[in-house]
Image (cartoon, rainbow, N blue to C red; front, side):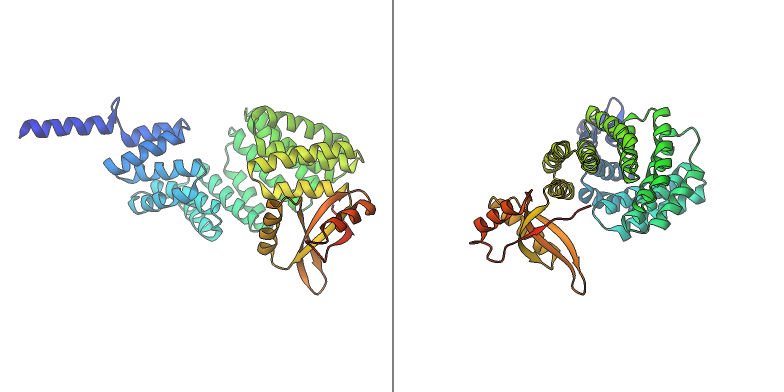
Length: 377
């Protein structure tokens, strides 16, 4: 019997230990090394073999990092029930907030971020306080509560070490984004410049490219086209080199807008087509639509096919028509006393004659089709 017990213990050690590490510790090492697939795989084993707070936390956090917040939440919720110290509660609250934010449950995200911030204040952990304030600000920004978001971002600067240049760069960029949404582009430019300086000094080169694109777009807004072109071209070069496709598409879109403003329509078209292609490949429908609308703005005639009051119904119909081969887009418009309506149209016509020819072609399927102009800013 003792031999059997000893054999069982040896087997258990073999399963739960690699080079002296427990499965939970091994999962943590994988997480620290940003090997999130390995962290999930080992974390799931650790949950089964060892259980405990750390195993659930690391598994949930790894799922979040892999872009699967829906899978992260159950493990993080379980970790919450196993937490026994303020530090552990703060850690799980942080990832719960991030995960709920990612699935669109902003009220829950705000609750958990607020709880994390409360603990950070009690512990006097300045770095955690700055993180919590930034997380809350991000949710408020997405909810459209810009002044509140701005207040949280600015407060967070009080708790960031002057040596933490990456964090300083990120926060200044976030503040710049708020001012850009508020259309206070001069303040946005000031914060973007500071963000770039901090990021460069801190060696955060992955962040510099997107920041330069933000800066260039703000220069375009104030009609400083020379600086806009310089920053946008450099920013695009940097994000392309880093392989950040969403920012490559965004950079192409910003440059298309710049060359449209300069009246260089062929260059506008080339950048807009490239932006649209990348947005489509990465599944960014909003970016794809923006690129289409920009293309329409330099070919200002359209054939309107159908109009919908319900946004979801309009986009479902849009998808159906695209699957049938129609190159259709949606224009959102507000009609006085009638509210917002969504018009499905075929665009890209430089003159009325071509638009009327297309209308005649589709008249059989769309008896109410009509020709009109497109006006986009």
